[in-house]
Image (cartoon, rainbow over all chains, first blue to last red; front, side, top):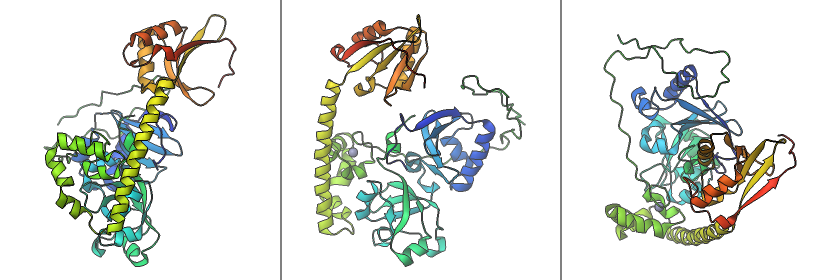
Length: 184
Length: 223
Ligand SMILES: [Zn+2]
C-alpha cells in the first residue's frame, strides 16, 4: 500500500476530525485491536485533535500532532502504523515468516504460505486460528520486532493445508514510504 | 461528578464551517472511577543510520555504517547482534547458500546506495532554484520559488517562514509541470534572494549562484 507513496503528491488534504466522528472511530479501533481503552488514550489522547489525512485512492491516514498513528483503505480494517505496533506489539495477532522471506517482504512482496508454514515461520495454533481478512503483525524468524503489517488472504488453517500462494498480503513494512514519513 | 463541558473546540480549520454541527450528542466522558493504568509502550531503539530496529540493519543498504553506529552508541547490542555466536544463531533455518546470497545482496545494496548518495550530492550541487516574478494583473504579482526541495528544505515550513516574514500569503502548490513550488503573494523576489544569500531560517546551504530570478509577464490560464 505504501511501496510508492509521497507526502507531496499523494495527499489530497488534511482536515481535523469532528469530535463525534472521533468517538465512533475510537469505538471501531477498540473493537478491531486488542487494546485497552486507557492504552489507546495514550497513543491517541482524547483531548488532542485527530487529523484525517486524505490520500489518493481512498486511503486515509490519521495523525496526532502530525504523527501517523493509524490508517484505513476505503472502509476496510484500521491498521496501526508499524511504529505504533512496535510500541504495542500485542494489539494485532501475529504471524511469523522465516528468515528467507524477510528480504522479499522488505521489498514489498506479499507473504507466501510456505514462508509462514516452514520451520522458521509461525501461525497460531488451531485453537486460535485466524480467519481470512484479519489484520496481522508480521514478525520474522530470529527478530524481536515486527517487520510489517498485513492482512490474511485465507484462514491460517487453510494456509497450512494449501501451503501455496499468498497467505498474507503485506500492507506496510519496515522501510516503505509510510515508514519514512515520521510526521505529515 | 465531574461533568466537564467540552469547551475546547480545537478548530484550526480556516472558516468554511457553515452550519455548525455541535458535537454534544452523548458527550460526558467517563471520568468517574479511578481510571485503569495504561500499559507502558515497548521502548524500541531505532538505528540512527537506517531508521530500522538494529536487528534489521543487515537488510538495509547501509550495514557497515549501521554497525559502526551501533558499536559506538550501544556496544552491548552490537555484541548481541554481531558477535560470532549471534551470527551463527541467526542463520536459523536458512541454508548456507541462502545465507551467503543474502550477504552478497547486502553488499551489493550497500554499494548501490552509496552510488546513489553520491549522485544525489552531485545533483544537489547542480540543481537550480528559480524565483519567478509572475504578473497576475497590472499591479499584482506573485512570486513562485521552485527547486528548494533539492536542498532538503521542507517546502511547507519554508512557505510558512515566508508568509510570516512578508506578512502575506504563501503556499506550496504544483506548477503546470507537476512540480512543487512555493507561491508567495506579492512581488518579493528580491527579498527572497536576499534571504537565501543570508541563509535566513530554513534557507540554509544554498549557493547563491544556483539561484536565478526570472520574470513571467504572460498571464497563465488558471488551474
Ligand atoms: Zn541501521
